[in-house]
Image 1 (cartoon, rainbow, N blue to C red):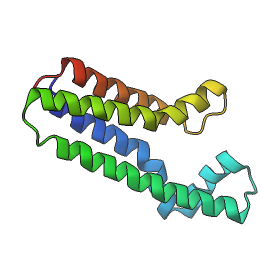
Image 2: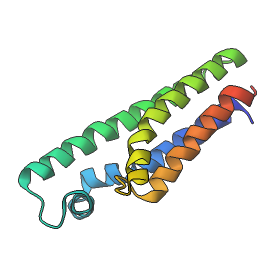
Image 3: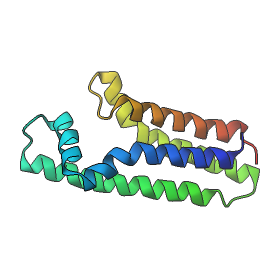
Length: 134
């Protein structure tokens, strides 16, 4: 599979993973639903502020990672693309690790589809670093 195709696919998957955060920034009802999942039915004002800050920071990080991935498609050398794919594999691994640990502990911090998309992204970047083509 072409590494640039993997990059575009992973950028799309990461965007899909970030959709709940983006929606929570614009929809008070959706935000309260996510907050209730994490903090219970009656969250404190501090919990709401903490979640809003979390959603903004992580949402912007997601956008930044997407732009890095799209920017990496400008490389043409196979070895450079493989190295970048490996670096993105490491980055996405650290991005997916908290959700995976929470899932293993039995207290998931993200919905199961988001966790699965994170693992698929992780696998695609690793595949690109080992067997990707130009």
